[in-house]
Structure formats: structure tokens, C-alpha cells
Length: 555
Image (cartoon, rainbow, N blue to C red; front, top):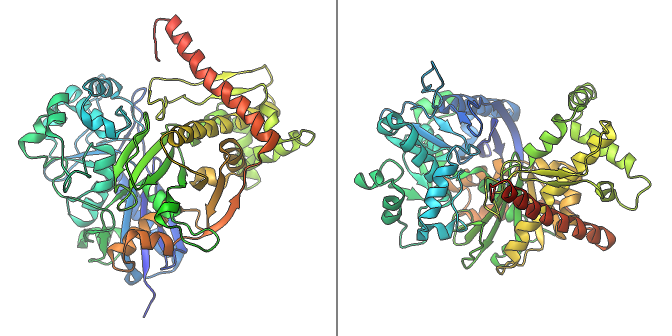
């Protein structure tokens, strides 16, 4: 009998990816396809759900081809995606979220508000002013990246869309709906992004909260437009329909798991990684933090008891690891910020051409150049002694929870050389790591005792990114054997839904393994970063002082 394979589908900000894994969590094939994004105005970002589905189909077919696997081998499917908002009518057709422009009506094809879209800042502030009890479970302040502000924006600004819409889906749930026909929603998506109280009884929506913020319409149909059947990840949401199977190149009837958010899938893929050959017990999980880096970063920690951390999302009941509370920190721009430092420099295009010609990456070229520059220094970090970055170019997700903050750079000169670019690149990576340290400090102050970061995502492929994070946080960093941990986390859920694993926790231990561990430098390096971390904190205070001087306190 042919060994079963488990399919993970991941939709990120710029692409859809698919990965096929065996029962031990080894990836045997992968595929990817780009997805389109429209930016009609500042702070606006839109996708098309139809375009996303087509990209998923291309990615799955590519993964099957790469694995040289037949469709009969795929035993279970797990799906993750960003927390983007999908709007469809009663027939499942897209309904526009595009405000249009002069002379152009909104395009129905553009029916997804992307997670990073900040159009609903004013609505988020109105919701936060309500001081409703549910806000306690999002760090005290709701983010414009969550769904309630976006829904309120649609009601305020696009009343025709609001009236036509029959369903509002989180993107992962919509993908499961497209694959199975089921309207089941995920405990992960609804608890983390929709204010669902999964820990109360069998779970409930807070009716008073919806009335207080002006979304009382959802009470009229008992929340049918946003979810009446809400189930934990790993349960079977349904089976692959004939139409979906044809589009994906698979067979009908494959079990499909309840969905999960992309960062949370990454958390599943790394948090249970055995280190030294030993799978962690629940108490050990509390000493770990999953660092999932990409365009943005998420910092996922779990605990047996709820821990309320001001400015940090959660605690969310059973939203990632079953039976444990999830606390989720994050940075709104990490990979995007590093890329801005590179591509915003005069030498950025030239460096890109060189990387392409040498079949490498701009990051590898810059890392090698940093080694040359630091050859006569006691440690590479000292290159940035006089250059400091505040990484709030897209606001601060946590722990400051202020989307209106903006970034700063101190210490710029007139040098446009490759040396200057490399040092600014390093300072930007350090700034991201100081942001991680700030989140860790907030967690530790509320009872966490985190000593290990388990890293995945784009940043985990960059040695400088990893070194600076270890040295700046003082935590060891464990790297999983499988670098595509987000895809693996989704595949784990597919294995559980198909009965290939008895449960999510068991799958975490059985399908992941450690590759290597990076220890922090300590000593003078740690003291250097302590001084720069103090500058990092001071820059925020200075930013607020500038804003206050200009009559714009807090932004």
C-alpha cells in the first residue's frame, strides 16, 4: 500500500504555497504561485478570493509534481492563511471591498481586505473607546488588523456591500468553505480575530459588545453571517468536493481539517519540536516562544492559565495548542522593514542585479559584506554603535498597541556606499530584534519564563537575523528540521483530520524535529545591546515628544 501523504496549504501576503509531507513530517514536495494585491490608497490593501483560489490550485499541482506523487496518496488536507476578511453574497460570489475612485466603481473581484490593511484605524479607536469586556482578551485594545474594525468600516463606508454581503469569512475559513462547501468556522480564527469567547461554556459571541459598537445586525440572524458552527483545529470540517478536487488535481472525499491562521500553523509546526530527541511536556511548552517571521512577525507563547499582558493579543483559549491559552505578540513590519532598508537605498537595484547574476540573495551578499566590515571589530554588532532604528514604520502591534506610531532613524550620514547600506541593514535587523525583546519583557513581567525561541519563516533563513535575535533577547534559538514550518503545521492538522495522528499535540511531537540550536553570546555583546535597547526605548519617548510638540500627541 502506498504510504499516505498530508497536504498543507498556506496563503500568505504575496503567494499561495502547498507542501506534501510524510507521516514523520518530512516534506517531499512543494509548490507556490503568486497572488495579486491592489493598493488603491495609502493604508489600503486588497486581494481577490478567486485569484487566491486559482493560486492555491497551481501550488497544489506543482507540489504533487515535485513529489512525484499521485492524488490517491493524499490522505488529509490542512489549510492556513492570513487573517484577511473575505466578503461574498448568498451564491458565494465576491462582493467588493474596493471603495473605487473617481469615475470607477468598486471592483467586485477585489473582495478581500488584506490583514495588513489599516483603513479601519478610526473604527478600531471607536471600538476601543467602548471599553467592553471582550477587549480584555486582545491585550486591552483591538487592532485595525482584526475583523471587527474592518466590518464596521464596511458598514460605515460601503453600505451597498454591507447590504449585499451574505457571509463574512476569515480567509482560512473561506478556503475550507471553497474546498468542502462547509461554513464551519475555526476556533482559532474566531477567538483571535473576531472576539469570539471560546472559553465560556461551549463558546459564545458577546451580544452586548456587538450592540455597543454598532454591529447589532449580526444579532438579527444569530450571527449566521460570521459563524454559528465553530470547531477546534484538527477536527474534520468536511471532505473535498468533486469540483474542488478537479480544480486542485486531487481526488474527492479527502478529509479537510478545520482551518488555522498562518502564524498559528507555524506555531504548531515548531513549538513541539523535540530538542535533544525529547518531546516537550506541557510545562516545557510554557518556556518556549514560537517566532514566526515573514512580512510581519508573530510571537506565540502558551500557558496552562490565562495571562493578561497589556498591549499583547490574547489570552486566547485553545486557539493554537488544544487546552492551553495562547498569548500572541507581533510586529506589523519585519521582513517588509528589512526589505525597505535595502530597496529604499540607492544601491538596492544594483545589489538585486548582482544577486541574480550570482544566483544568490541580497541578504547573503549583505551578510558577507558585514563580515568583511567587522573583521577588525570585537564583534559584528559594534558596526551600528552610532546608527539606531525605531522599527515602527507601520505602527506597533505589541506591546505598545499603537498603529499610528511611525519609524525613526538616528545617525544617518551622506555615505551612499555599500558599507552604509550594509550597516543600515544590520541596524534594521537589530531594531526588529529589540522589538522582540520588548515583547518578551512584557511577557516575562506577567509570569512567563521563556528561555527558548523556536524560529521559522523567512527570518530563520538569515544567519544575521538569528544571531542578533539570540544575542539581543538572551534566549537560545532552536531551528526545526523543517524550515517550512507553517506548511508543516497545516499538514499536521490534515493528518489529525484524516486519523493519521490521534491529536494535535501528538502530531506536534511526532512530525517535527530540531536541526540545530544557536546560543546567545552574552558578555560584552549583551552589554552593548543593553545600551542600544535603552536607545530603542528612548527613541519612542522622543517620537511622542515630537508629536506632542507638533500638536499630534501619540502619533
